[in-house]
Length: 513
Ligand code: KIV
Ligand code: ZN
Image (tube, rainbow, N blue to C red; front, side, top):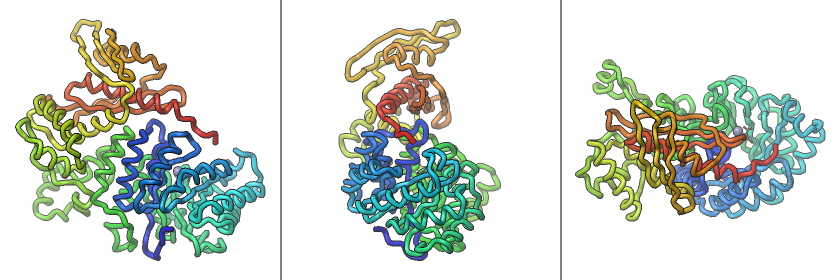
């Protein structure tokens, strides 16, 4: 079990569970494994790898992550049901350090869902936590919607969970309702009132509906919590969860007033942020704290002048502290394999020889289309490489589009579906519309295009365009992304990427709540 000292804060990452639960953020099996390895290497103490009963895919991912983990505790989520807890244990038991996390909604609103009285729910908590503890000696229990649960009842059920063997009690602010002072007061009250509270670890799990998740988590730490639950880029349902990079950097930069340590190697933050943005399809807003594109950019003359005189004038942390390499010279069509390999290493990608061969070929095509290939271009290229490799049921083989002032616009498209080529010609109210109609003719899917977004990766008319697409189909949502110097090609690839994810999503069967 992970030991806590008075001043040490455990970082519990739930990107692969609460983050992936966010509509449209589906990750493939391999992407989940890759993110878990990066989290483990970065020094995350506990990785919540998934919700094993949710689907066969979730179960397999948690089981494999558990088998691969080197340092982190691997945790799976389960509802307050024996069947869930058993399935969770089956998935995490292969980890060197497994944890079962079980939860139930304890607020009046949530108690009404299973229609249990206070006493009936208390009894269920005792039985399910005891059951989990009989399987595993590291058990976390969460009273979901804790911040809207009556204090007397919250104290009572936490006491029951501790007596039943829970080793960590997590206090979720499920709907992002609390505020910093209230968050701290709640923890102070629980530590004082609940018998046995001093023998276990308390955790905080905040959602960002009112934009206070980071502040609420830090306030809870000051009141005595020693585990923060968070996600990379704050990924998560609705407005997301506490962002890992924000709490970790706040504790590092303001260690003078918050003297707590974590095990996180902060120089790995940027790379993880980019990978999570790519695989989830949730791009990071430019002005996002710590990991946004502009987080370290100084545009105004006064700021630039001040920075040149002394970076501390306008910088409270250095870009390299979060793994942002100083911007270096762009590559071009004469750059060789060794230069590309070195640059990729700076950007956080260690390319094996055969991968370098593929990436180099794609780089050469790009360098023929663009005079200068910037870091952002290479990151977009790698993002594309990742999505193409992960979802290969449907792939764009060839696209030719006729467009101009007089329509109709026409798209001749060839896709490979399960390795077999299919070609069609379609028309539409513009080149992108014609292309999407062509995809629909080859793979009729019934989904609705809910978002179509284009942005330039760098400046200039030869810039690559990154296209994001969201397809919705009943309860299923899938995001796709791709980059290319040709906006219509990027659009076709992004649409196909989303479609591949939609097919994966349909295979998943969400558990009834
Ligand atoms: O937000 C929440 O309440 C949760 C629980 C399952 C811990 O994610
Ligand atoms: Zn949550």
